[in-house]
Image (cartoon, rainbow, N blue to C red; front, side, top):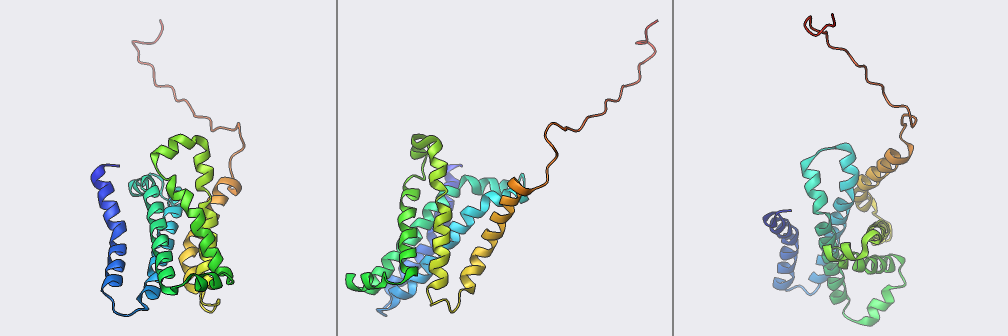
Length: 216
């Protein structure tokens, strides 16, 4: 990716964070941190969903230059998702105020689901660079596949955060990803394919031989 494109991408990814932080620094309401924790979490989930949708989308739109560019930028999307998740947790800790309240929250399953998702994201974000890609070799991709576990924990955390009274928003956000991943599984495992060894035979059409080339 050209360096100018990388700078533009990172600027776009950072823009919502700048706006969120600006609100936090200029607000007079002490409850602002609890309010801003939600948009930070939503951006984290959305960026993770977009990053995970790129590969199955390429099965639909083969040859798409935009998707190829996004595929090259997928690690940046993942790191940005982790940054917004970290911002969400920072606002959450400031809002709770004391370690006693934070520990008391751990009795709720959706809280430990969120913490577990963040813990898994840490090594994924740390290794999302060329150095670890070369260092880990074949082990890099299996490590990055833990993103699926993070997505499941995020869906649980988001859907249960209001005592399961309104999980529709979380489900709607994750529905495109679930649908595309189901299609991806069908495409690689269940899709009807021609039997191996049976290749279409190309018909060879002989060009007419000119009179000069005909044997005498």
